[in-house]
Structure formats: C-alpha cells, structure tokens
Image (cartoon, rainbow, N blue to C red):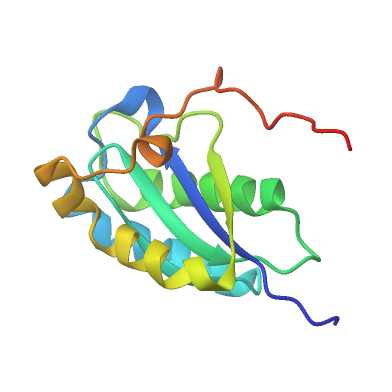
Length: 145
C-alpha cells in the first residue's frame, strides 16, 4: 500500500430528520459503525451526533471510495439497528451525505467539534456549513489560471 494521509469529516441524517438516535440506541449504533469501519480498514477518529444526524471524522484509505464507505456504513447500520431494536418506526438514514476533506492540521479541531456535538447544538455554537447542508448546496467552482 502506498503512503496515505486522508482525513474526512462526514455528516448524514436520519430519514426525514426523525429523532431516531435515542439514548438507548446511540452507543450501540456508534459501536457498530466503528466495528464496520474497522472491517473496511478505515479509521474512525471521532463519532457523535444528535437525535437526527451523525458526524464522523475518518481516515479512509484510497483503496475504498468515500461513497462506497458511506454506502456500506449506512446500509449495514440500518440493517443492524432494525434487527437489534424493536421499533415501531423503521430506522433509516436519509439519502445523501456531506463530506469535507481535512488537512492534518485541521484533524484535531474536527475531532473536538464532533466529540462536542451535543454541547454545540445545545449552546447554538454549531458550524452552519457542517450542519445545514442539503442536496441543493453549491458545488465547488472551477477556477482557471
């Protein structure tokens, strides 16, 4: 394997932003995601969220695409949650996700932000660009020299 240092901040929400990540489910969901990420030979630096979305800071090796990583994590965790917990409303993740690349110098700051998700939401100190994304957000712009 080639030398690689790739860091990403990923965000995705529950289906229709329902409050499906309960206090009872949360530790099991996060443990499952970390375990699945280990199987995929990725590194979870931080995972946390609120009742309706999660943030993950991860290192994903170049042999697996970001979209493949997200698809496998979201798909298998949905199956796991729906088979472990008896739920009236079926658990599901919303389509799509946000991904932001990080440099090594930004990694620690991203980990701290994710670990303190509940406090950021309670105190209104969220980073809007990480929290309020949707499918209509503007993509990066081309610049020519």
